[in-house]
Amino acid sequence: MSNSEHEYSCDNTLMQLLGIRTPIIRQGDDLVQILLESLEKQGTKLQNGDIIVLAESAVATSEGRVVRLADIEPTEEACELALNYQLDPREMQLIIEECDEIFGGVPGAALTITRGTLSPNAGIDSSNAPDGCVVLLPEDPQKSAAFIRKGLEKAFSCHIGVIVGDSRTQPLRLGCVGIALGTSGIEPVEDARGSLDIFGKELKITRKAVADNIVSAAQLVMGEAGESIPAVIIKGAPVKMIEGSVEMPLFSREECMYYSNINKNRK
Amino acid sequence: MSNSEHEYSCDNTLMQLLGIRTPIIRQGDDLVQILLESLEKQGTKLQNGDIIVLAESAVATSEGRVVRLADIEPTEEACELALNYQLDPREMQLIIEECDEIFGGVPGAALTITRGTLSPNAGIDSSNAPDGCVVLLPEDPQKSAAFIRKGLEKAFSCHIGVIVGDSRTQPLRLGCVGIALGTSGIEPVEDARGSLDIFGKELKITRKAVADNIVSAAQLVMGEAGESIPAVIIKGAPVKMIEGSVEMPLFSREECMYYSNINKNRK
Image 1 (cartoon, rainbow over the protein chains, first blue to last red):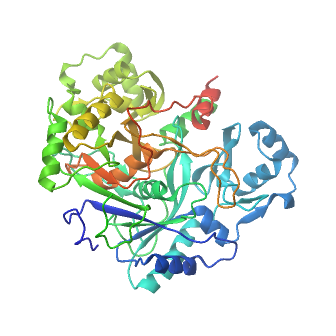
Image 2: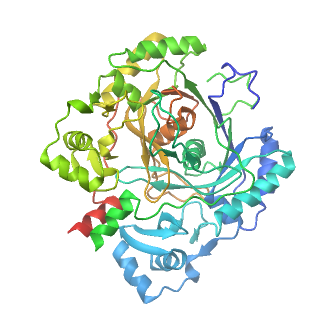
Image 3: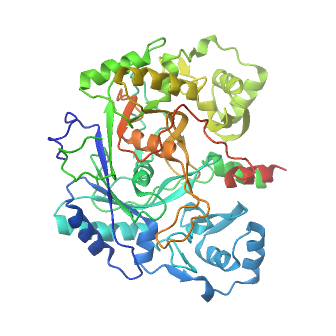
């Protein structure tokens, strides 16, 4: 990272985030090409160790995951569940098709697990979708991250990380934070077990959700609304770069203190 | 924000994070004084709009919230619950005393609500505590944030934001992300309802957990272990500054899709 001209002293604790403004992303767009053009327009070059966070809606849209609700014929099950959760029956139909499991909900949101990740409404969103349409999650966010990483790395001859990010609510908290759906080129969860605390004692169970934290940081710059900043560059993040991609590590449902309590109480 | 010498063009999408290294914080320490000395040593000045994230353990320790486990006499109830959740009975006793409510748990963690926030083990932590001791959460994190903000603002004659942050796991995710326990000088949750998406449609239910996202960003720089970086400055965060402090807005248990499902299943 080059920060010699910076007002701060050069230090490994300096991290920088820069939004990338793009035109509106549409179905079939070449996202790598759009990012390259937008970066050039801003005069920004990617360097080794940089991380790009991409909004899942932009990735999904470019991959053609936009569905016209008028084309969906809801089943009886979907109509029933839609009443339960006060959702559009056609959106409910898509949720059923997309998710692995529905295990509850509140008015406006069915609580699902979709591709291993807890996703209200299977991650289906009508924001930033054309009128009358919704955007499904990217089919394979890790594959998308790997594909975009390779395209950008080739253009800049460097090793970077790419994260496809989304937003989620947390239990009993108001407002959305970031979550990583897929990553490539970085270690998404850092295992800090065995590290020592400031008193030299061994930490017991601390893992850091590095990729989720990076998406949360990026969302500050990105915004949720019409800012047209679907991508953010992070420079100087103290993240472990890797060759290739690793799956988001799974957390067993029994170990999860939230899920296991939902589960237990259901019996 | 002064970034005229920076390699990027001046842009409102540039955000910077800088860790503040301090000596180990001990009980009774004047945290404002330590921060001022550490900032001076690093040659960093605070400016209007800067936000400081402080690790709750540093704040709590300076406020004397360190408890020697040997001094705690667990009740029968604590011993029973400690067996249930595989915790030290003395720590369990402190959890009972600190929390508003225990509503479940897994081995190693009792799931509680403590001062309105979902906090495993009532936020009590033995990491970064002296041997044989644990650190309780700050008694009133918002008050702590306001106090430290005033001290720093006076020294630098500027208006800043202060957040007392902690880490939390998310449902079915591996690893900890950031959470704001108390804030001062900023709007902790931004209401984006009524904003327009990229297609000009009104967003329906999006609120941004700005303070939580800022803590997550800071935790990338901070680390969880013995790095002695209990504070991080964020410059250029697109956050709404306010006079004074507002409480973290409460989310009703019924509206929360996680909690309401736990709750429903209990009936």
